Image (cartoon, rainbow, N blue to C red; front, side, top):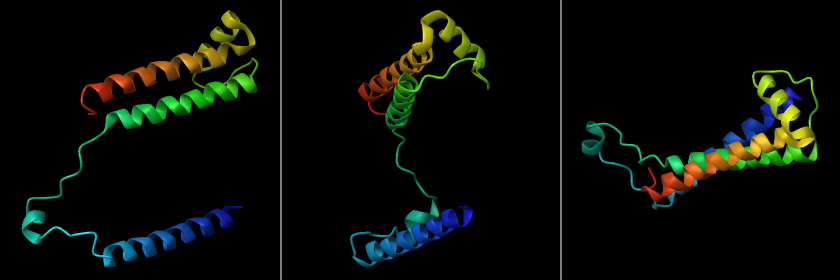
Length: 119
């Protein structure tokens, strides 16, 4: 199995190299002149709302998975006490309620970040 993963990674790298060469040869990319590079490379501005939205969607998927296949105690790991509490308070779907509330909070943060200018 590790050999297949390594082979898949190498194939993905070769596809990326071919795609990048074709993109550079097409002329749609204009490289920066040396004078512009002298002061250093400038990254595009961060879009924090995109990260928050992606994290919120992943947590929502986690809530859906917990709803379909609920885990039962004893829980292990760093959040085991939190999961035990939510299971004791809200029943078998308590853990999915926790993940759904966490996802909703993160998505709400993403909305506020988007409305404040995207940064």
